[in-house]
Image 1 (tube, rainbow, N blue to C red):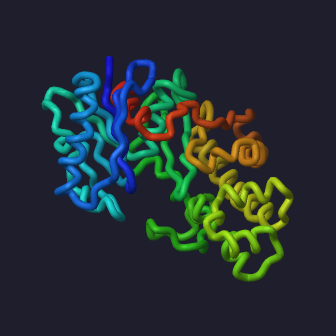
Image 2: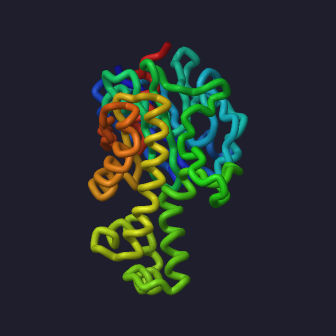
Image 3: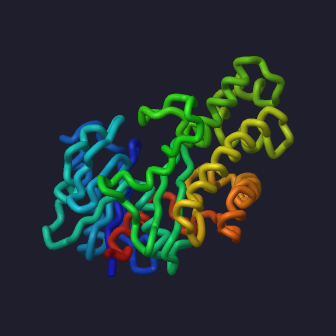
Length: 314
């Protein structure tokens, strides 16, 4: 069986044909059009190219940011440059025969779907996943099913309140997890310290080479014992650890999966995070829940989207 996976991003749309083993047989990447009038024909062109290279897929999975109704594939809420897709049913935009089923969900649940079919969540019934990037996405599998909640909001783990009087979040709340632990939050904390003139290798680096003012650079400086970078990273990990400990108490999962570009920090993130989480949670749980990196290597979102087609359903 071959299925079509589509990842709709703010800058690019990636589409590919994926087989039952999770291998991408053919793929196509296009720049994301600026409006609906150009979006639909551009998407049809990319899909048409894939159909010529392979064959009609058994199903289509689509991942996109925003709040998506998985039953109708309609995008209920989507801010930013893709706002023109709000109110659209993605199943009606792909241009394939109506007997080809189309599934759609937000990008974090799509990542979890890939892990359920081909990755770390395979064979497990209760799993938490966090996608760590410019924002913090989340997905929860409970009793073998993706958690969506009454109105499809379930699993937005990046909007757990960590600091009641903390920084304003884009969602309208204050002190959300992603205002403390996200690439933007970590970079923002570093920039603020640099502007205050704090002694750090980051001060000269950020001023002379602002293109290097990234979360990755802050983690690298912390690894090299820069005191400022270490304090920024430690505060962020402490917040993430507190949030995860609370989630373990709520969902009692078999394991936690971390994905996204910030998770590429590897042991610099995982080791202190595990210690923080386990110290906070083992008293009640009586065990240390494994915290691991995602196993689906594809970073394009294509394989995860394809996993929506193959993931178990109630």
